[in-house]
Length: 182
Image 1 (cartoon, one colour):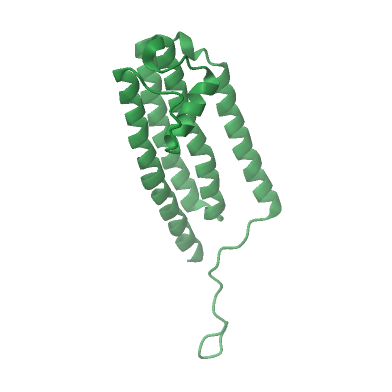
Image 2 (image 1 turned 180 degrees about the vertical axis):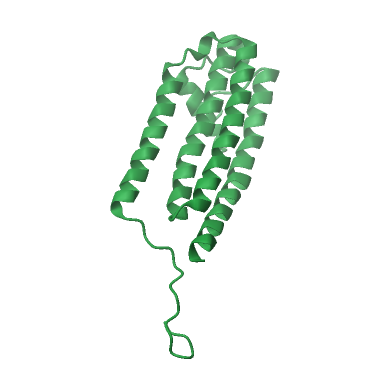
């Protein structure tokens, strides 16, 4: 394209990342998710105390917030902010879901009547994803007040993650693109 005076207009579109960079990003995401799932699977979650369970949830949520904040920083500074944003979502959401799944398994271990059935690691993850996706099949239900409070906290946090975190990450992509075009 040219300006009215015939000079070439500068290109402002984001350059496309190379196949190697995309492959490296996919590998980082896959490795991060694999590490998170492995930790979730091997931790003896059904042998925790109440203070340990609360500490795990609070430290985990704090870690999640710190992770999203760091990812926003990385998105803004990245030469490929959109690719970095996809990576941020692909690692943050599993971390968030596994944190609640772990908390449900801990609660079920502490109080077996908390849910309609005992929760294995797979059951905890399944229940977390059904709550997150708002499907709620009803096969696993929160039966005690602490379990219902925890599910309510997850539902509110889900709305925050889906709304605010996505908005923050999209805003970071826009800021990164703006900084890149200067």
